[in-house]
Amino acid sequence: MRRFRIAGIVGARPQFIKAAALCKAYQSSRLKKKLDLFWIHTGQHYDYTLSDIFFKELSIPKPRYHLGVGSASHAEQTAKILEKTETVLIKEKPDLVLVFGDTNSTLGAALAASKLRIPVAHVEAGLRSFNRQMPEEINRVITDHISDILFCPTRHAKKQLLKEGIIQAVYQVGDVMADILFSYQKRVKPRRKPRTYYLATIHRNINTDDPRKLARIIRALSGLHKKVILPLHPRTRKIIALSRSLSRLLKNSAPIEVISPVSYAEMISLQKYAYAVLTDSGGIQKEAFLLGVPCITLRNETEWVETVTLGRNALCPHPTARTIERLVERMLRKKFMGVSRRIYGDGSASERILKHCEDYLKKSHD
Ligand code: UD1
Image (cartoon, rainbow, N blue to C red; front, side):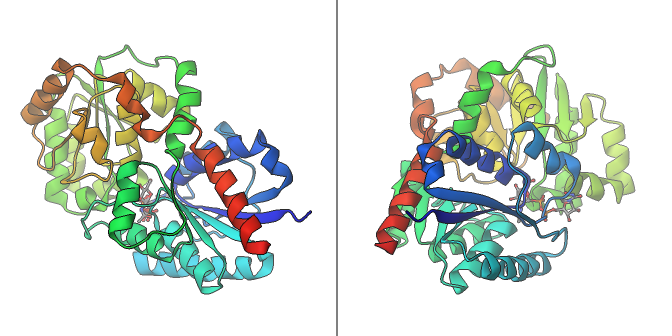
């Protein structure tokens, strides 16, 4: 019997976490006999704290290829990913390419595979922010439209694809980040005194690339009445370091404690025991929701709309300390319906994805 070969593409921090969920399901599945799942790391993220730490901590096998792409402009980074992935795909000839999320690695690899007529499966398909200022929105729209199998985390995402005319091989499977979170969260111990701090993350270009916007966010955080723990993404750190006024502002912001990016377990712990989470990340909004912690999204819109409609996430594109505090208090007053956390699945999304991949490959090779 033929063992189908699947190349999983990762490159940036959130993809390592998604890959870890798939690896865990793969290791314990009978499908291991039928599928050979191997990994290609584009090298989009290369700092230890954004990459290697997750491979170690989450027991992700060493990638078969590391493309060493690194940082560059969007065009250059995507072009390098496209070119280098193509070379590997020509050599390896996998039966299927699995891409995750919405980064430049997702788009570059999906494009390389589809031009080689290798089927592409997109994990986290159908999400939209409807904001084309975000590079991630462009990446996810194009990736969805060139993919052959689409794995949607929610009903809403599946509906969106149908609206865009994508109807074939669209599956609502649940969310892979929820899979890994469900298996981790019970083991997590508090690292700080619970509910005494906010946890904040800022790295989106819409917040970091305009110094006035970044200054506004830092000012808002520094006016809060609780400590703010800020694991600082290298992108944001570099931008602040290059600006004397931003550096001074951050240095004089007493409640803000800047720390380096942290491991997955540490991030889950910091979120779980936070008073509230303040973020512009997509994955963190969803994790905060699943952990039952109020979230303020420092953006105009979110692709995880359910977190907002269910009253546990509030959009705040122009934050002040006062608005943040009011929004959090309002969320805390409302009772959270635990059952609705299931909108992101039951923790078996990864198993479903592997099974659908196997079915697809079996059918197309019959
Ligand atoms: C990327 C993704 C974003 C995801 C995020 C998670 C795209 C378009 N964006 O954003 O969707 O939420 O990863 O972190 O793909 N840098 C380092 N070390 C690294 C990686 C990056 O210092 O290991 C710095 C560099 O200055 C680089 C900047 O961060 O220029 C941006 O990195 P890049 O990977 O292009 O985008 P992210 O902002 O990390």
